[in-house]
Length: 394
Picture 1 (cartoon, one colour):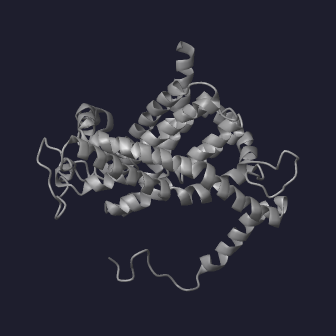
Picture 2 (cartoon, rainbow, N blue to C red):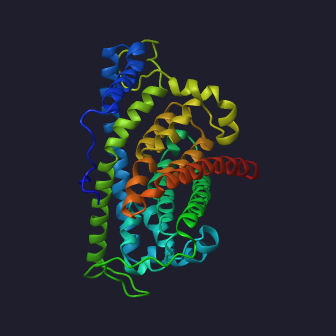
Picture 3 (cartoon, rainbow, N blue to C red):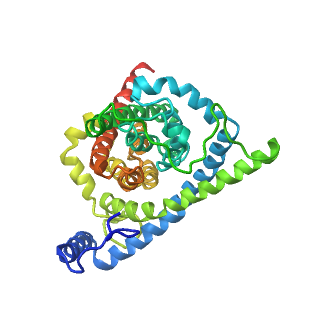
């Protein structure tokens, strides 16, 4: 480690160009809202929108996370995850160019979140299957399936609000996310293959890691009943942590995005109420609608806000989806695209750098982000056209 580097970052000069440039950008961005809405209304809308998101959305998503955390813990405790791993293994090499062991990373992140794959990378029995150039691609593979179960469950739960079943849309979106994950992972392997060489040695084993005996899995102590209760409670606790962890993303990112999407109140005036804004994103999206329509088939210009939000936080994107559905601005095709892009991207801009750093692959952070950006776009395009095809055949 560089002697200047400490926990949380490194040292820079007390006064540097960003010291003077950033306040100008910050003031300009804030003025974008204040000029149109008024200063008092802007501040009130920020606080009211954040509060409504916390009460109406975050608590609901947290409840989903707790329930799904308990379910995923039960599936893991009683061997379903191991079964899924065995079933997926034969697909990994021909489809993803990754060892069969990477299937465990797919299952783990699908049931939880992007960084869950990092816990596997410290396991001796997991690392030994990978060559050096394949290891960094675990970031792209894991992120593409991060929060998958929660995203799919939440999207399907919008069926009553939509007024029609969304099973086909969510299933199509899931397939689109898989296509995006293949594109992202294989593209990343092209970059890592050039950087390390495809014939590079196998990964060294992690020091102090506890190896699990081959063809075995670890379970909790006690009988079936006590193991079941422990799995449910432990999984629920992890769901609470995940629900709490999405609070900053939802309140900060989603508030900003919604103020860029929504317009004034029904009276046409700004009152400082929640969910008011300047409608900048729909205006910009309408300028490139000739590109977005054939790519994603969005029903309304406002829909672009969901994939934009998912870049930073999947939880925030989910809350924005619910808002669009309630306003009638999203249809089943949009849900398919949202599912694919929210799952494939799942806040990768906020996790990729730290995940690559944890894998000691800092020089490849830019390549990982570029690969995943392309993969997410492919996921959305694939979901749209698969849904069109499904609609024609149905």
